[in-house]
Image 1 (cartoon, helix red, strand yellow):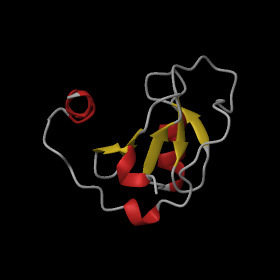
Image 2 (cartoon, helix red, strand yellow):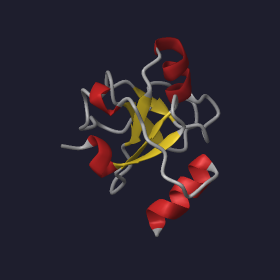
Image 3 (tube, one colour):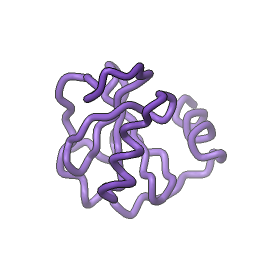
Amino acid sequence: MVDGLRRFVFQGTTRERYCEHLDQVSIAEPPEPLCPSRDEWVHVRMCLTCGELGCCDSSSAQHARQHFEQTGHPMIRSIELGEQRGWCYVDKAYLRGTDFLA
């Protein structure tokens, strides 16, 4: 139920979307949840390709999205305590922790 609601919020639909980049996950476990800048941030995200940390799209600086736009690394995950979800920018797909965690 919760995943379906989150999928709708992020994707605009409850239909599952497939992410073609899951084979590119190289870092799944997050370090300490700190945004690299001192800007106000709402939630911290981690790049699943290189581990770069950045604030989410709800934050003013949107560092996670900027990292994607600069590098092309397609997937991020939440590193908030108790959250195991992510997002693929390219496929616009909501990811469950079971998609990217071993």
